[in-house]
Length: 215
Image (cartoon, rainbow, N blue to C red):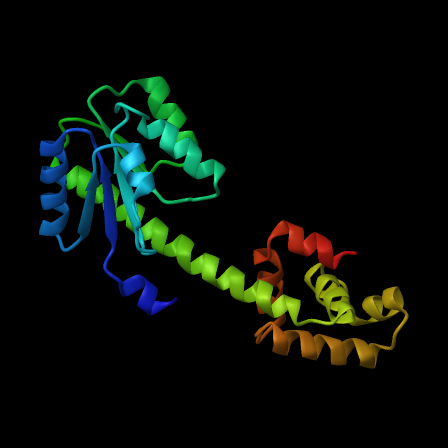
């Protein structure tokens, strides 16, 4: 785990058109050591220059100029998986289902107990930290994969798919010794200590990268 990432102070983004609620929620977050930033609308949030830090969002559902659900859909469309806790006084079952299917951490109805909200925010932060760590690992794997030769990519793919050295040698028209040399180079470049590590690295690579390695 990237400890620096896990230990940075989380930032909770609060979006609610009620200034009193924003202040109360910000104070609650600060009381447990979290940093909070409040916004009166979705547009205000989108126009803000925000630091790239772990955290989550606490969004009201119904607001003038754009709802929390609209923002969630936009974030999903832009491949931004920032965890969201919905907090609303107007929740209903269809809204809850829509929000949860799109990946919301929780959908809470005002008034809500402080501890219930804090538990949801904590779960969101933990999810974001895990996602950010995994994203950094994937980026490193993609960079490592780019350093492989075309033959090494073929060997890596074959090993990850469970092919034996003799089978790989036959498939590629090379000797078993050459396969072993390529496999050793692949493991070094992919920072894999075991075949299990190499298989996990393959499985974590984006689908489009794996498809490119098949060509």
